[in-house]
Image (cartoon, rainbow, N blue to C red; front, top):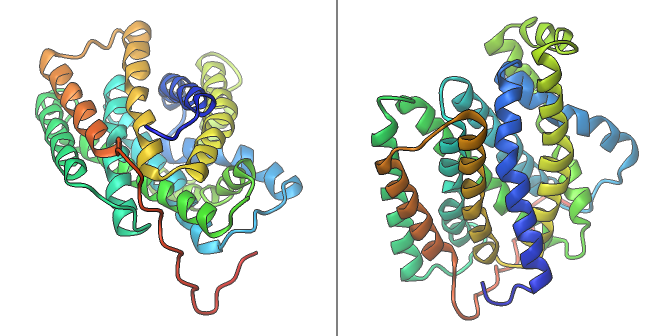
Length: 312
């Protein structure tokens, strides 16, 4: 990951630890809250003070919507549902890192970053490793949770590209403000999904019963997700995405499942099978080849000026 400073490497590793442990917080939260309501709640807690006190970053609305829709809505709607219906915590941490090769592909297609043959081969290998894990886990987790987690990885990748395009289009934008305003996008759509899919009173009942017993642990998980997973982790990630090409930042996410799977093993006794470990190694090696570009990379071309659009 040439060109990344030692300080920014340390920040990348900090994100790795925060996001790896985030999966434990998600698990304890989903043991009490329904998934769509829990996703809406995690962002609503941030969105209210943001709307009141944080200046809106001067980025195009389309890139903010892409960031919030991909990173906030698609990723967590799919991920939380997958984990609620049986996706193991450690395996979810691994399969979500499909975002790394997805980010490189979308970077080439949308942000016009150069894709090398070795990266294409790495993407193919990573997808093969994911298929191997899916085959291994099919009797235990089922196919649907695996596919939903892959869809969450694709949502994260779209969010990464939204971040990249927003910060390229508006250099100097405050990355923390951008992350905070991303959190304004998901709550209303997620609450609507919760009402439609989970029932109008399900989430409210879970919230009302969360101040005693197991609900307190779920609230602690929510606090971790909001403060450390979202504000700190996503803020640092946005900062890194604003400074480097997507292919230089995405490899850090490959270390998240190492923390997540180890923590799930220690906390929940989730012990991966030999075939799943082999698939994990293939995924990490392939995604590493896909995202670790050597030599100078072509910077993304300036995004076209949309008709009738402007910056805020």
